[in-house]
Length: 351
Figure 1 (cartoon, rainbow, N blue to C red):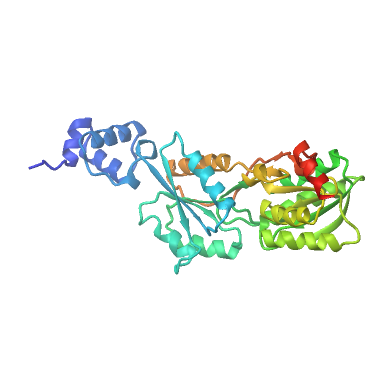
Figure 2: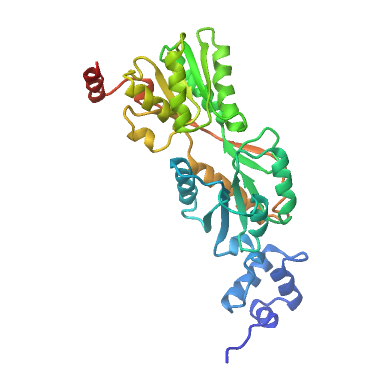
């Protein structure tokens, strides 16, 4: 019969008192980091059944994090999760994707259940949520459960780490100006998504600050390929056409370019186009697509760093509503600069 390991066994093995061992294992009362380490190392050595969530973060075998979002078919969500998965390399974190798209339970109820399901923390990406929605969600989760949002809103409820969407729009307008384009246009994203408004504002603010640039064309998009196609139809009928267009995401960009190219429009000869997200398709499409690059691996690493820090603190779930921005860059390809010889020949065959 296997002998049951007791607190007394750990006390004798570690050279500490039973009361110190008890405080360490239950994370209650004051105890030095060194004594805490001795207790948990002894407990592991003696195969004492430990509660994972009571084990100090630096001594845990794994940290389980849930990435909670409305998952839809498409490259964006695949790229998002791949980036977070890559971010876990050489760490003791494990990332699981939990979609709330087709569940009967609300996102708040799903989030509230995660600690019972042995998750240590959660990352939420719910860009259509308002401050009121987040406040309701915050009230439903355990007080000691860390949550990080990666979707920006004007008045954050949860601590938020997200991309610098404003700078992304700014970079696109600067790129157009440097290439000599003067009359610019934008296919903006959904009004109810803060990142779409930030991208638009960064783009327009740069234009308004430059005496050489004019915003001559706008279209209200929704991030979909279909809406990108509709944007092209609007462009086609417009009397005043822009020299260059900023599409607020890559899906919209693909929709616009697909219809334009089928109609014989030379991109970038007649109109230059830049997207946002820099999905893998941008390198595969013809012409290749210039796009604002967002590194989901870098975002994931920053999120894991903050969650690990929160789990190391006495009050890991304390929410201050701070926002931390991850930098973006512009990946320049053919759609805004110059076609390769191969595709130039293709355009010649169309005319």
